[in-house]
Length: 110
Image 1 (cartoon, rainbow, N blue to C red):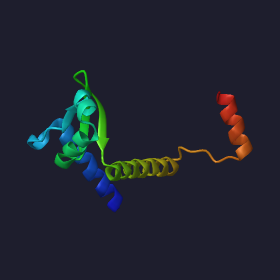
Image 2: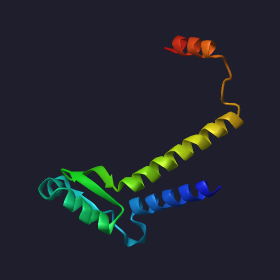
Image 3: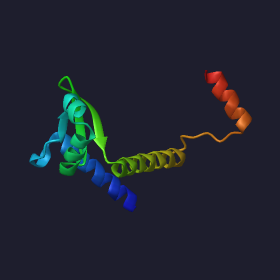
C-alpha cells in the first residue's frame, strides 16, 4: 500500500531528526524568544525546518508546525489506527454482539 510507504518514510524522517542523524539538529527556540518576538520568530524558524521545538527553562516542551503538516500527521495516525483495527479483526481479537449486549458488558466492566 502506498499509505504504508508514506507512513514509514515519515516515521524514518522523524527518527532521524530526533537522533540528529545526518548532522541536522532540530530547530529550537526558547519560550522567552517566543514571548519577545512572537509568531514572527516561529515563522522564521519554520522557514528553516518543518517543526520548531519550544523549550521552557531548558526543557523541550512543545512542537510548533505548519497546519498542513499537522493534518498529514493526523492522517498517518488515523491510517495506523485503521491498520491496527483491521489486524485485530483478522486475528480474531474482536467481539460481535448486539448493542444491548455491548452496553451490558461495558457497564459491567465499570
